[in-house]
Image 1 (spheres, rainbow, N blue to C red):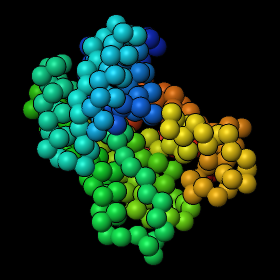
Image 2 (cartoon, helix red, strand yellow):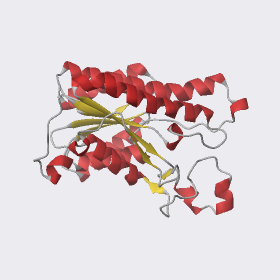
Image 3 (cartoon, one colour):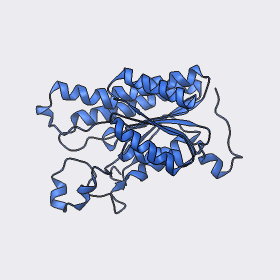
Image 4 (cartoon, rainbow, N blue to C red):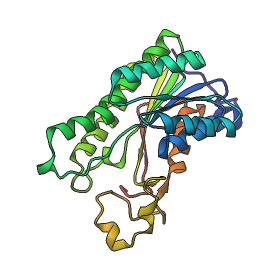
Amino acid sequence: MAIPDVSAHSLPALYSLTDRAAVVTGAAWGLGKATARRLAEAGASVLIADIDGEAATATAKELSEQFDTRVKAVQMDAGDPDAIRSAVETAVREFGKIDIWVNNAGIPSFTPLLDLEDSEFDRVLAINLRGTFVGAREAARCMIEAGRAGVIVNIASLAGVMGISPGQAAYCGSKHGVVGLTRQMSIELAPHGIRVLGVAPGFSVTEKTMFLTELDDEALSLIPIPGIGGSRLGRVGVSDDIARAVLFCASDMSLFMTGSTLLLDGGIAA
């Protein structure tokens, strides 16, 4: 399935997601919520999938009141393949299709390598890496069965392209895996017209990390999160910095891109 040439389309048309259906995992708050907001603003119907079902419902209500589009919620544990498949079924039931799938759900890990237990390592990979794999696979199966093109966006991390601070072995391993999966899935899904892109943020301010911006430099230096002290661009990232990049990936603006991972770290890795 060849992608179309959209050279004659206007800029608003290229960014528009009208009549498209999206699923964003881990979207009750933070980067996922910001992403869902931008996709809804662009006209997409959006399913908010999150392990916190109550918060997901609240976010769906907020966005559906803010934008003239359908926003629904579902409780979903990204570490549970059955829950992911159920979210796919919910999206199809509510919207009739899936055009965009954003694998955003993930968990951190700060345990030093020599203290890292197998169970913690496995849990991080189950959510961050296997959850991304299962979500992408199930979304792709849905798109292929419907004979539709689509796009899958995997949220990786600065930790997916470089080694970072101590205590990040599990997280770093999982996010390197996400970057690799993005490349490989793009090869296998291209014949079906499905594009796969990655977005790799550095540290970004969210509802749950806002307090970190109030710490002094000495205190920040003790926290094992890369880029927390700022960037080469004079500030740390915010959720919408990432959401705008996901919108670009999901829209026809990036129609000739697949397999790439966009690094959104304010130049930290440069």
